[in-house]
Length: 111
Image 1 (tube, rainbow, N blue to C red):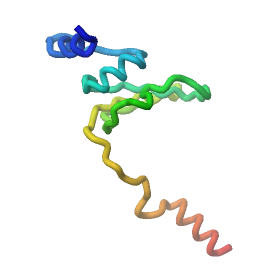
Image 2 (image 1 turned 120 degrees about the horizontal axis):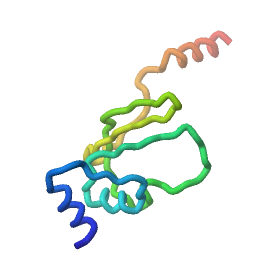
Image 3 (image 1 turned 135 degrees about the vertical axis):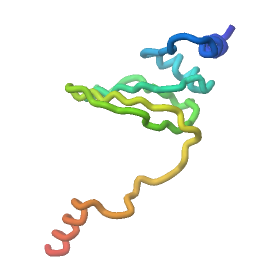
């Protein structure tokens, strides 16, 4: 039985949730098979400059929706994401400038 078939069989049984903690290889295999229901991502406030990517170049594209988020007293951000279907192209462009941008433009114009 493949790992994908084994995990699918376990998911079909009643019982506690299955969790993957720190396995970049297994997460990619299960993500490609659409077997992950929820991602719990913890972001630590450090820059190391290198490290292994959670999703490698061949990962199946898919959108995620933020389901919950909280920050610890030490600045760790704990986010929970759920799969949200296909990636929808879009833009981060704001339709209206922020108050800070309006103020910056006014200073430049008065300049």
